[in-house]
Amino acid sequence: MISIVKLFEQFQTVPELLRWAKKEGLFPKQTVKKPELKDGEYAVPYKVKEKKLNIKTGRQKKLPSMKFHITKVKPEDRTLKNIPKYADGRPKVKIKDWLELKKSPKLYDKLNDYSWGWSPNGKCYGWSHRAIHGFKVGDKIKKDSVGNNSSKEWVIKNDKQAEEMAKKFAQDVS
Image 1 (spheres, rainbow, N blue to C red):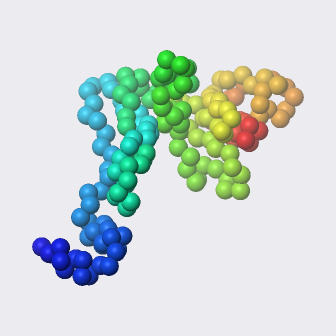
Image 2 (tube, rainbow, N blue to C red):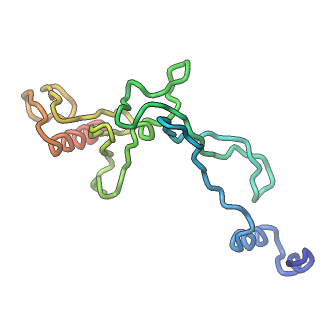
Image 3 (cartoon, one colour):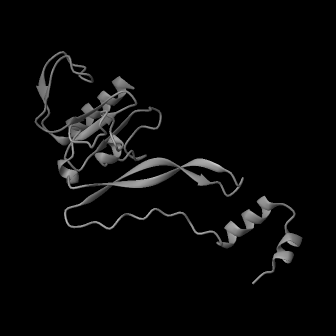
């Protein structure tokens, strides 16, 4: 155990002391624990800003923290229509978290800033800050659909075509 006098002799400022304490592991790591779930329950993460004490400045500040929305809707059954909402119509969780969409570096071209990904419900989604839409095998693409460059209607026949439509949709709306 180190005495307080020796600590203040070793460090001239409080930030130096805090950096040392973090490096030594004296502060507990802020890990987010998923809640205990019963059978048939699923946890969807969402962020909230709570008033907490900022360790560096000693002041209260609104810092983001992670919470979980408990639902009984399976990931395979989740759609844009059954997303949990507040009374005023705003969604409680992010759409990407609800649909479990991941934007992986392997999934998109780094030169372009459009996003697309597969969801457990079997649809390939294309999204940007303006819009989101899912495509699956069997969907009918109309000639005036966003992302349809051909001037005719057609039906998605395989996963590759669904993926291409999601990419084109994301490009067109971004």
